Length: 285
Ligand code: 3HC
Image (cartoon, rainbow, N blue to C red; front, side, top):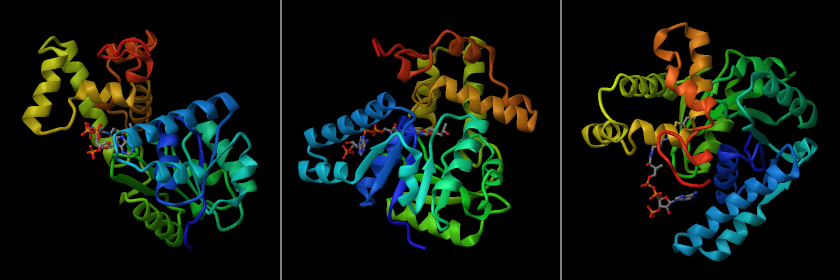
């Protein structure tokens, strides 16, 4: 089954990136948000990104208009009934995701593959909320979506080969590289990345070195494109804490436990770039 029309639920940081890469690759793409204000905010951000690319001569104005022309925004889940693939990118909350999958199952035609961009929720539970568990899988994108080449294609013990094949082919068609992984909290990347980020916070809390020097050390010493604190601010401290908590809950291993400083920064509203302040100060939002 070839995927032509794509749906995305959620037009936040990840959702709007998925909409962009899908429409950029030529797919008619329907994006659904919970209300008009959130939809406008997400689509405005996407438009600004494309305008920026046009201003820097990375994209022709004609092509920008064509991409925008392929995107339909909506606040009604029912508008996803035309989609061959729907990627859910709502907030990381298991009950909300299960509920979204149960609704999608009723709205979408029988052939539609339902995917979640979750980084930490249980995809098997989302599959079990539908009457088509064999067509439910994970498609885990990375932030910033338009620039990061990887997509983890996550199969549960229920997912069938046909759905995995269709999803992998779509991932390749949008210019990304799929890797296969089983439904296990954190998949490949977060299983390795989260303990590293949390350890960086512990090292900083211990007074070993400054934020700037830890970042510099990992950039120049290991060739990472960003140091851990720049990356934490990009990913979002609330997102990192949530993922860490879910991983700690699953594995009960100390390396996944969110350090006290991370918890306090989230309580203080220092969430990273998106709030204007995280480990670094980004000025006014
Ligand atoms: N769409 C298309 N192209 C875009 C774009 C967009 N939205 N935004 C920028 N570009 C283009 C730019 O025009 C530029 O083009 P050019 O090379 O032709 O000039 C190119 O992309 C590179 O842009 P930048 O100069 O901004 O990029 P950098 O070279 O500074 O790299 C980075 C930025 C890719 C973010 C790099 O720093 C990086 O790889 N950082 C690490 C990010 C990372 O680890 N992400 C994973 C986070 S974990 C996660 O997401 C999992 C979750 O579950 C927690």
